Amino acid sequence: MKLIAAILLVTGGTCAFAQPKTPAKLDKEGHPWWQHAVFYEIYPRSFADTNGDGLGDLNGITAHMDYLRKLGVDAIWITPCFPSPQVDFGYDVADYTNIEPMYGTLADFDRLVQQGRKRQIRVVLDFVVNHSSDQHPWFLKSKASRQSEYRDWYIWRDGKPRDPNAPPLPGIATDPNAPAGEDPPNNWTSLFGGPAWRYDPGTRQWYYHYFDPAQPDLNWRNPRVHDAMFNVVRFWFDRGVAGFRLDAVDTLFEDPQLRDNPPFYPPNELDAAGNPLPGAVPPKDPYGMPLQRRIYNDNLPENHVVLQQLRQVADQYGAVLIGETWTENIAQLKQYYGQGAAAEIQLPMDFLFANVNRLSAPEFRRQVGLVESSGGWPVYLFSNHDITRAYNRYGGQQPSDQVAKLLAALLLTLRGTPILYYGEEIGMENRDPVSREEVRDPIGIRGWPLEKGRDGERTPMQWTAGANAGFTSGKPWLPIAANYQTHNVEAEEQDANSVLNFYRAAIRLRHRDPALVEGAYVALNQDDPNVMAYLRQYRGRAVLVALNMSSEPQTVRFDLARQGYGAKSRLHELLSSNAAAQQKLSEVSLQPYGVFIGEVLR
Ligand code: NOJ
Ligand code: CA
Image 1: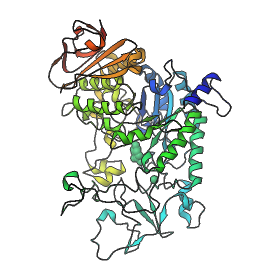
Image 2 (image 1 turned 60 degrees about the vertical axis):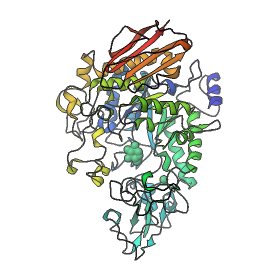
Image 3 (image 1 turned 90 degrees about the horizontal axis):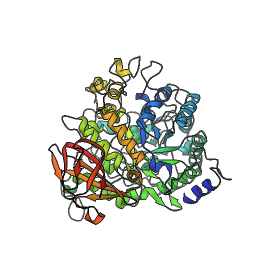
Image 4 (image 1 turned 30 degrees about the vertical axis):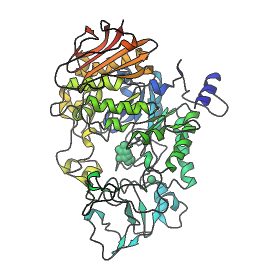
């Protein structure tokens, strides 16, 4: 990466073997653009509708480019906007190199990129690497016959005769099209419920799908699949895309022998040697299937080889790869960064941070400390189109704007790249469906009521207090969240104390103060159960961040003698909320969920 970036610099952004559309500009410290950028995720279906069909579209994003500029974001990640039957709302791609007609055209997309570029906003797309739609021509040809030249583009196998002594299968595990007495090739379960195999009566074999049956897994062991997918990446990079968010990167490869996964038992059901205690039964997933450890179809070492190759292509364009990297621990997350010639994803998302589901200074401190120690450049986010909105998750029974501001302060003052989820900046709340009939998400339909699905975090963006929150002149595809009359862009722009104005101020501060981007992270008062505090130290300056994660007022004292600051040192406020402006190191006072960010002055 470094070598290529250096070549790009000396040649003024181009070199013999690559035509970068987005040159990898480095700052004085040698940092590339994606370390400075604030990213903003857009779910296009829900952002802004310009043609009244109740679904957001690309022109809707373009129309709000000035809003995004004013917010201060540097890059937008648009979730899949490619032609798709929309079974999983775009994560079932039927054509990787075109735009879904309900979202617009390639010309609309080019205009969006161009309008973004005018405002220094880069565009990142979503690359659904693991699977296509079952309506993709590749799959239709693959399914056509066992002899098809596309057969091996997906994973097809014969079923197994059912053991007559085996207990009957739960309803969800029964494929009505399969011949009586035949079971899938192995015991793998789908993340979206039921077995991970679907029987095809036409060719009398089963195909594998980690997610929905409408999302058959591509066979990455086939070099033609590999090449076709790499051509997709180049197609979009050549069109000016600044990077990709890589969907489900841990599921690319499967065990070639398709061995059965072992059952999963919670730790309290295991003996000291890790064997299940007598009578232990694996718990069930929300769809009724026994949980298993996905050791044969998740996180295989081969995934990393593809990521290294993708990185090489991305580097030729100065582009970024953002990983949907669900990991169990930091060691696993670390692997996704790779190293040197084997570099992988620049920005693997730290879901361990997003998994801290309550406001807890010790837990956030611990997670940030762990990711800091990994040596990689951290990537922080609170929610996305698969995760309940932060406003509710951290706000408890009575979500408050003050908590939303505290979250903004944390996200935007840590060392690492922040990713905001659309609507987070105005305090949008979740709106879960109230009945199964209302659910649109396939996992909510299949898993109701234990799994309500993800509609709640995908409701339309709230632009105004008017009809349909100003999202559409038609009927919105999902109901609007209840707080739109108070939490919308128009109202919050007028209110100096709004969540929106706090986000804007925090992003502005991040952009202006190099300590917040480049500065070292130094945790302070590590025993404090309520206040998370840290310094960002950079070139002899120190910015202090103190966040009261409790519902009680707190007073904190800092000892920065080692950094050369005595107890009389003053703090020059840079941004605060629910905290006094004049503060001293010997006594920083924060009201409930109060935020204080200030430069330490000797
Ligand atoms: C992860 C995406 O974020 C999610 O929305 C989708 O359903 C699955 N991958 C399958 O593509
Ligand atoms: Ca796969």
